[in-house]
Length: 222
Image (cartoon, rainbow, N blue to C red):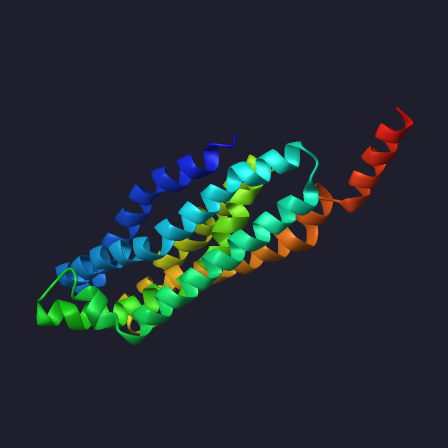
């Protein structure tokens, strides 16, 4: 169960790519599909480092959770979130300011460079807060709640992103724009929902100070 979330996130990428490419091919042709290939590669610049930090925090969180050191768990989650958020904000800001430089890593074609630059600015926008989402999802696994990690992975891609890819172009004239816009919309909605649940409900229940006091009194009595 703990492995279901990362498995699903990897396995669903193929389905997501098919949906994006099908829509972009219909509305923007092969040039838009080529630009989308660059977009997904650029998103890895954002996601892979924050996933590495979030995954690296897992053994520390899990060890201290097993040792009932809940305060250390909270400190580790907080530190991981600060690190991932700082990185995602900086890298997304650089991509927003200098999209031509990043797209230019993959192509020298002037038309593809122009299309890819404005697509990148839209597509990558939600990445600025994805550090929060990744840290929360990895922390669910660290604290033995793989079901919640799987739910938010499913929620982001299947419930929000894929339907938005097909629904948004029905309501706007620039259909290539709306297909790309589905990514940041799903990122923002998922991250905000995940953050609220994680901090307002999950952590209060899972890492309750009252539980520590109760266990301490039981040990004293023994």
